Figure 1 (cartoon, rainbow, N blue to C red):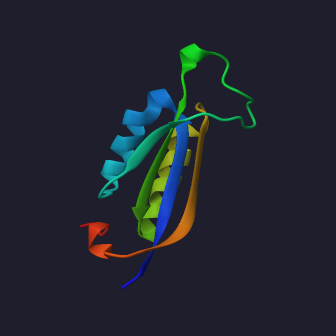
Figure 2: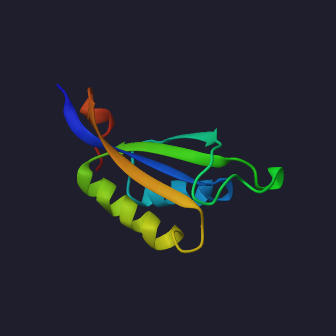
Length: 101
């Protein structure tokens, strides 16, 4: 049976990975995936190799959890950090793997 969830994608400065993962855990996500990414955005390319790559973190959650995560990311990081967060509708099989207590 397919169930509709939201895929949350967070692109942030690498130094924020642990903090963002802790934020996700506070929202009781059942899992997440991270990878190093590079790119160019409104702030241009990264200034130096010292800054390193960005991290992109994904998680699948119900819509209400997605909204709360996105609000928390905006509140904690948008003012002082280079962070982007967005959501997409996805359909998952085995929804019990993504259900939250």
